Each structure stands twice: as C-alpha cells, then as structure tokens.
Image 1 (cartoon, rainbow, N blue to C red):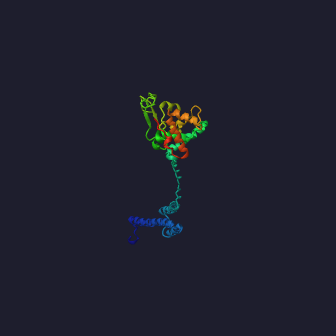
Image 2 (tube, helix red, strand yellow):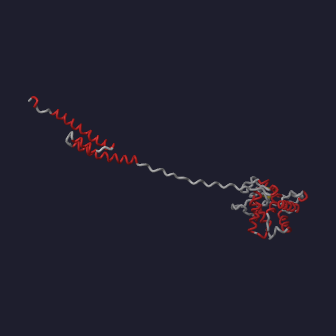
Image 3 (cartoon, rainbow, N blue to C red):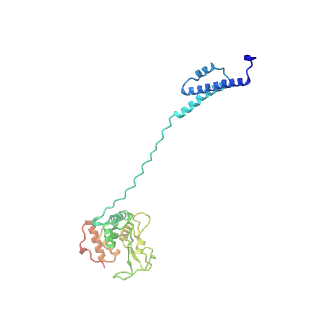
Length: 288
C-alpha cells in the first residue's frame, strides 16, 4: 500500500475547501475591477486557467455581472446634480400712506379746524349751492363759541380730546332762557336742564333736527369738528337764506344766538379770516 494508498477522506475535504476558497476572491476581484473601470471578461479569463468552472465559480461570475450594474446605478444617482433650489421673492409691502399734513388757517386757525370749516363749505356748495356758504363765517362762529375747540384739541378724525359742554340753561344768567332737559342727558350728561354741546355749541333739540355727518363715518356727533361744523352750516342756511347777502347772514347768526353783540363778533372774525387782519377791539363788543 505505501505511497499508492488511497487518500483519506479528511485530505480530500481539505483540498476541496482550498479549491473553493481560491475561487471566491476571483469573483470579488472581478466586481471590484469593473467598478474601477477594468474589463470583467479579462479577469474571468485569467481565473479559468487556474480551475475549471464550478457551481461556486458560476455564482461568482453572476455576481460580477450584477454588481457593476448596481454600482453604476448608484454612481448615476450620486453624480447626477441636484436641481438648483428655486428662489422666490415676496413683493415688498406697500408703504403705509402718510397722514395728511393739515396746514393752519389764517390768524392761527388750527389745521384740523381749518379742514373742518372748508369741508363744510364744500359739502354745502354741492347740497345747497344757493346758500353761498363760505368757510370764514363758520370759522367766525367757531372762534366765538369755543376758541376753535380750545385751540384745535381734536384727533385727526376731528373727535375732540375733551368734550365741550356749556353751562346749564337754567335762566340764571341775564338773557338766558330756561330749558329743561330734552334728551335724557344723552348728549349733555344733564337730566335736569339742557346744555349747549360741542365746539359749535348746539342745544340738544337743535342738534337732533339738523345733525350732519361731516366726516362720512355714519355717525353725527356734536363733539366732532367735521360733524358740528356741517350742522352749523345747515342750520344757518335753513329757510332759503343766502350768506352772500349781509342781511341774510345777520339774520342767520342772530337766530344762532339771540344777541347783536354776538352777531358783531362773528362777523368781525369772519372778515378778519377773509383779509388776514385781526379785528380791532371796537369790532368785538362784549357779549353778555
């Protein structure tokens, strides 16, 4: 038996393991080479000189063919540039409108009062052009009644910062009528006697009859410069009077306040605002 003895099973198994172990790296090398750009056919040809193809080597060859395709797909995904992000731009917001700068009127009329007087003239020229209302007449009344709402103490809507309310009409002053409450204190806060309200000083019953909405906000408020000035214009023009006629304007002002000294003061200030010249003391008799 000696050297020609049949090899033992353990030796055959060891040689088979070695042979198969030698085939596995060939497939892996082929896959790696393909990824780097080498030809898989050349690598597989070299492997065939070392061993005959077996089931294991055929599987490795299939892996070598599949891996490059998968790697190429991954490379395509990784190398394909991502689309550039789309930049969007929001339109710049519209700038807020700047508030109107109200210029003062002649002889120091506050800007808000000046605007209210001219606004009433404009509205009357459309609604009642035959009246011939001029803003200076309204300014004369505003000056005598409340000093132009105590020097224009109102916001940009014409609302007074502090309400103007007159003394109770209880007959305690010379020539003053006694007028008991007619509005339940709704306008003047007095439930016993009426009081004149607002910068143009209306008693509640007269206000209710002639109330106008001068600033177009849907409310007629005696404590608003635009509303009270328009109401004054409507009241003066009532009865078909023409303010361009001195007799008519005198009658209208006297009806507003039953005092000829009051009429003289209003007309003096109206003329002053028309000319830009202050009235003389003689033109401003004391109002009792």
